[in-house]
Length: 178
Image (tube, rainbow, N blue to C red):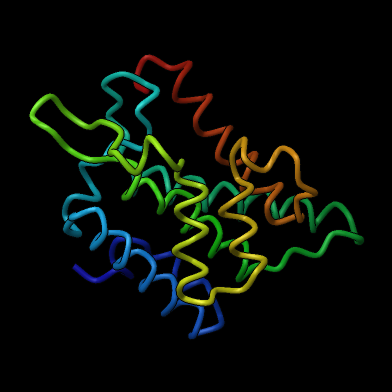
């Protein structure tokens, strides 16, 4: 399956080089974690909600699309806010790519891998993005989208992805369908 089929939001990025690098990062993460593209639809988006039915692809797309709508609303409301859309979408698509290294599947289900016990997904995801020389702003979004970013000055794009991620997580956690 092509990544544009899995993540059609890649097509929203104008910079073709950035599109290609996003795919390379996902492929490398899958290689390191020993995953196949079909596995992406089975990997839970979190291990913190028991028996969640939401997979990593659904969550990644939801966070990215939520972020786009927030950016639209902010830019429509405030002249001073200018969102770098390519970076926002790239950050949304890559914010949880490190989970392919953080997680593994065992007979008793999905668990933290040995590497995942050492480094959380924002760190491993940022490292992967660095390996493929993604822009620093995108690496910043990946690294700062979760609690690791609490001690940093987040860019507007990182702020949007951070809150989009937590809106999705907290909404699913509080629902019976999470």
